[in-house]
Length: 381
Image (cartoon, rainbow, N blue to C red; front, side, top):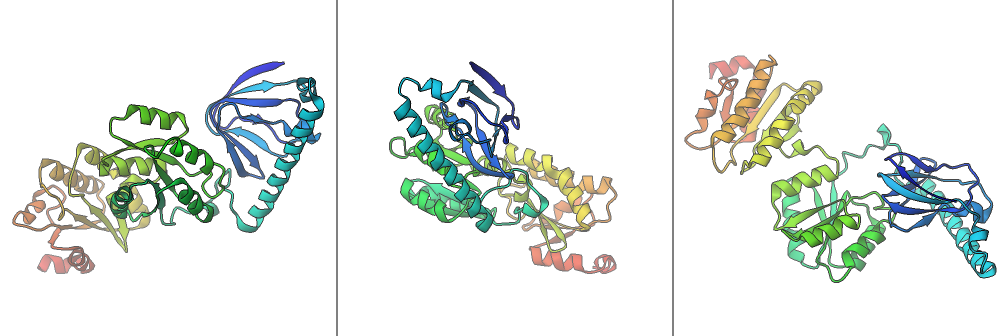
């Protein structure tokens, strides 16, 4: 009997603890092999056969197969011995050999995890949260200038970039280190990019690391190839800093507002980037309320807004700062503020609603010093 079944994300395809019959074939999607709440591996290649070990070894399944994404699976519910009855001696011997080998490998991998904690937890816990670790990104491109550009771009978010110029170098780096994301040029020779992505998914250090394709802007064929091959998404060359960073924040499941808002000591520091595109403005506005709530939760009552690097102090910049100040004023928060601004028009920021009593300073240190003094001293100045 052969049946095809659709699964939603998180559904169990094959539960552990049962004695199986036959095998399964992946038609679409990505599956996870889980034992003891640890992700041992992923199955994401269409046509992959799995679930055969239970019948071959005559043992109950000791791992659960779960859908990581929506998936389609074909269940072949017939005895394997009947399927290969035309050549039983060769086929069954080969299958049993492969089955025992895979079983031993899984046992070894589990013991290695107990000693080195190399597998990612299937269910995250508070203790497992490593969000405070520095973000490290691997860039694989045979053109060193690309890695340099991305390194300079990501440095503003305090992300570290390592580079590899070919498949061998990339695989070697991943043997000894994990990464928050891996960027691979789709312009690498032949099928290198696709092959490398597939090989990375067998490495436990980067098993769950998102892999992103780098394409030339407008190259729809390369983008389609990447997405069809399992890449998480694509970024385009030449790189648009705002769009590239936004995509990286999304792919790595990070708070994109960290590009503009930071907690420094007992201050909320809000720095506007040199250019305010519509994309950046919308990103800032979408995160304002969340950042204000986080600030209240942290018990922080000092705010510094830095507009000193703005290339053009236009209506958009004034609107963004004004809206942020008004939100704080409307919430009647006992928050004191300072604005870092330079030039002849620096004082004009005091004309914004909510900013009338804020200090105008030339740099961050001066702003900190002003806010460290009691309000009475500010009034005397």
